[in-house]
Structure formats: structure tokens, C-alpha cells
Image (cartoon, rainbow, N blue to C red; front, side):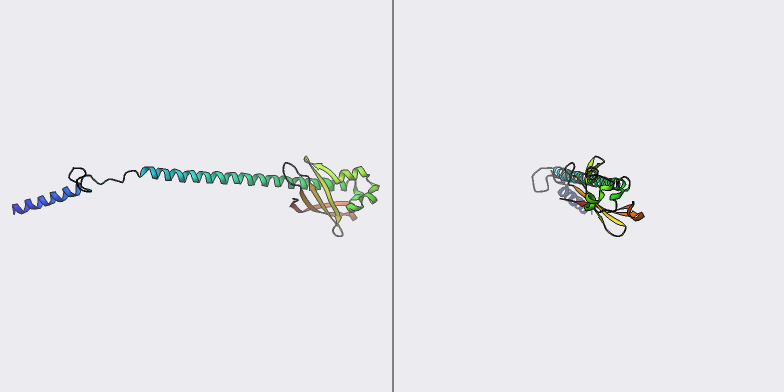
Amino acid sequence: MAVRRQWFRQQRFRQQWFRQGSGRRGSVAGWGRAERPADGFALPLALGASLVLMLSSLSLQTSALQSMVHSGTALRQRQAEDRLASAAHQLVGELSGTYGCLLALPLAAWPQQGGVCSDQASQGRLRRNAVLGSSYRLLAWAPSGLDRMDLVLELDAVERQPPRRGRFSVRLLEGGHRAGDLQELGLRGVVP
């Protein structure tokens, strides 16, 4: 029995020795050294992670720049719309006041029939004027029903922006002697 125990101990020792290695390097593949992780995995992993971070930061920067450009374009569009609306209110205010005889007349009839309350110079100033630092032109003033007039204005090109047109409808009150509400029909029209 003692011999048998000693033989089992030797077998266990040999198995452990073969599993862990004999302590000599390069004797048989896998015997001379303990198992350890593969050498050189940290550098490719770090490069991959830094590449992912760099691409995500570039993507964020691109989207931020793009949203900044869009917000600038939208701001310029709103400013042009405000200038067009201000020009329409200014023109309708002048037509309702001093130049009331022109209110019910179409633009083509102003030179012949508008001499009662205005001369050529004041009609020219009504056709081409400025508001909020931008000049505008009166393109159309024509009846569009019994008590309505259509108004079309064009802002001149400013700061690398194309000229912009706005169309409005004006309600006439008291038989065409006074202007009522001003309704915007289209402010986003851009003339190329």
C-alpha cells in the first residue's frame, strides 16, 4: 500500500510539473514558460480607441458648424421678412395718410389720376423708399376684389443676399379712403 501511495504521489507531481512547466525555457513548446496574455495587444487597442474618439469629435464638430450655418441663414431670412413687413406697413401708412387719393388707385393709374394729392417726386418716393436700413421698391399695387388691394414689394440685395419679394393683401375701408388690416401672403419668395 505504501508503494502504491508513493506511485500516486509521483504521478500527481509529474502531472503538475508538466502543467506548470519545468522551469527551463524553450525545451518543448509551452513547457518552458507559464501561460500569459499575448504580448503587444495594448498598442492596437489604444490606437483603435483614439481613432474612435477622434472620429466622434470630428462628427460633433461638423454637426455644430452645420447647425451654426443653418441658424445664421434662418436669422437672415427672418430679418428680411421683418424688413419686408415693416416696408409694407410704412407704405400703407403713408397711403392711408397724406396720399389717400392713391389708396384706391392701381399703381399704373398713379401718374394720371394721382395728381390731386401727390406730385411726381412724392410718387417716386413711394415707389422707392427705405426702411430699417434697407431700400425697397414697390412692384405692384392693384385691386384684388371689391375692397382689397394686392401689394408686392422687393427688398434690394444686401450683404451677399439676393433680393427678396413679399406679397401682401390690404383691406380697404370706408369706400377705399382708409386702409384696414394688412395680411401677409408670401414673404419667403426669393428672386434669383
